[in-house]
Length: 53
Image (cartoon, rainbow, N blue to C red; front, side):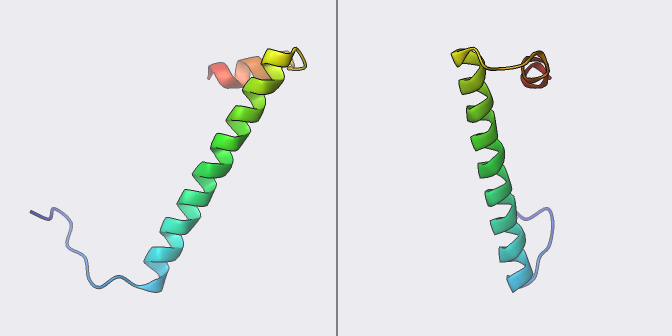
């Protein structure tokens, strides 16, 4: 059952999927870097606040 009808997959559809995957991977790497800085004691108050949001 398809709730949203869609046509054939176009190049733009794959571009959007790749963009979202890369964006989420970058966000994840930033999150890991921020946690690493906090654990090592180099994190600022803003970093702690940002992760708490």
